Amino acid sequence: MPRVNGDLSLFEVPAKVPGGFIYHQNFLSEGEEHELIREIEKLHLTSFKYYQFTGKRRTASFGWQYEFGASEITTAPDPPAFLLPVRTRAGNLFNIDPNSLIQTSVIEYSIGSPIGWHRDIPHFGVVVGVMKYYRSNCNRAQFI
Image 1 (cartoon, rainbow, N blue to C red):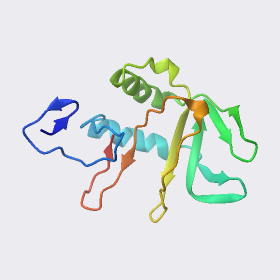
Image 2 (image 1 turned 45 degrees about the vertical axis):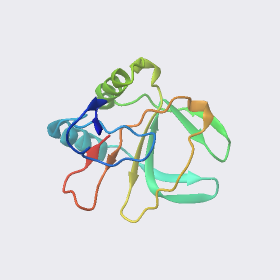
Image 3 (image 1 turned 135 degrees about the horizontal axis):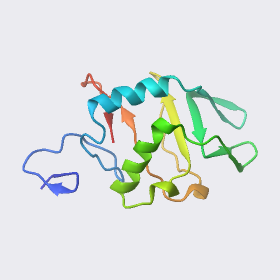
Image 4 (image 1 turned 30 degrees about the vertical axis):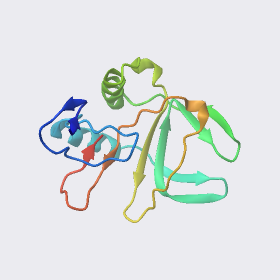
């Protein structure tokens, strides 16, 4: 039987997600989503660097940052205040102390950017993601 937010459902699950992901319908309300997008658009995102290569995505890191060329973690600015309620909600959802979620990445994938399989570096331990994705048959992004 399908599950939505961990509960049994008589109806089809609204989104197919990759293994290891949990879809939590309305994790953010539509109003919260729009406000979050407005705030993210104000961030200074930089092209992703992987050794001598430049990726087709732009990023901003907060709390900690991993430098691939130097293979080390360095401190990064604290997360902006607008991200803290999302961090708290994500921590509470997974019964994790939100204050232990100290590293935050904001990543923008432009249209046509490949998103290949990868593994996060082991230094970061537990990874909790709040993702925005677009489906080709959907007018609105969904957060999971």
